[in-house]
Image 1 (cartoon, rainbow, N blue to C red):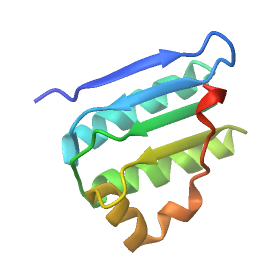
Image 2: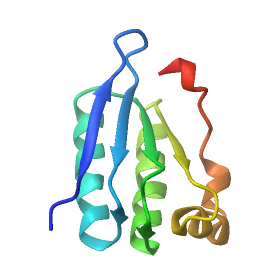
Image 3: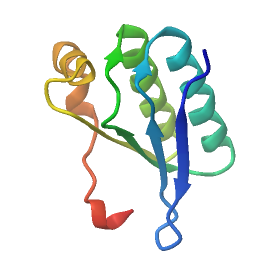
Length: 110
């Protein structure tokens, strides 16, 4: 199964928006990691991850986000994340305390 996602770049700010599909588990999470690694290699240091549609995630997905956050910050960049309250992703972020690592972004910046 191929992960569904969409990538857009703001003409005004240059910030990349990665809108994820319904699942962010196992193989899907590893595919998104490759996408984020490629964006970073291409010089995109600021990425906004829109996970509002994600219904399923697991620890693999959360670990991918935490690992990629470190890589972006090591390259003087940032990952911004938004997800629905009471979704599996928000629950995992809360349980692992990783949610505190991500900065929020004002929608008018993208």
